Length: 188
Image (cartoon, rainbow, N blue to C red; front, top):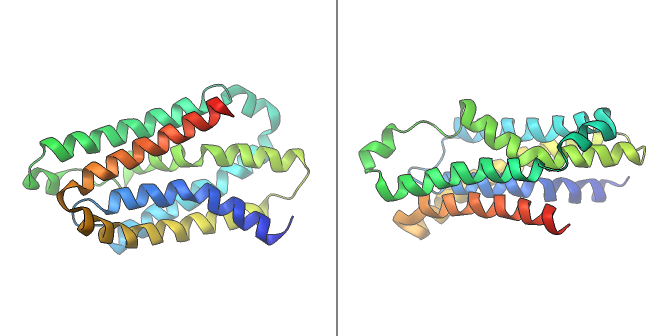
C-alpha cells in the first residue's frame, strides 16, 4: 500500500477532527496550546487505536456495531452541538467563562470516539485485504493530530470573522458532521 494512498485515507478520516476543532476553537477565546495539544492527542490516539482494534477484531466485532455505529456517532455529535447552540443563545459571557472545558474529561472522550468510529471499519478492511496495520495506523493518528492542531489555529480566525455567532456556528458544524456520518452510512 503506497504512502499517498495511506495519507489520502488518513486525511479523509481526520477531516471530522479538523472540523470539530474549528467549531470548538471559533467560540469564545479560542483554544490554548494545552487544549489544542490535548485534543490532538485524544483525536490522534483514537484515530490510531481504532483501526488497530478493527484489524484485530475482524468481522465479528464490526458486525455487532455495523447496524448502529453511525447512529451513535450522530447522536453524540448532535448532543454536543445542540448544547453548544443552546448555550450560544442562552448563556451570558460570564456563564460562558465558567462552563466546563470541552477539551478534557468525558466530553473530549465522547468527541474522540465519535470521530474515530469510521477508523474501526478502515482497520477491518485493511485486515480483510491482509495489509499491515501499524504503519497506516501511525499515519492516520499523526495526520489527525496535525489537522486537529491546524483546526485549533484556524478556529479563532473564523470566530473573529463570524463574531458573536461563532459558538452557534460551532454547534451547527458538529451537527452537520454527525448528519454527514449518518447519511453516508444510510445511503452507502
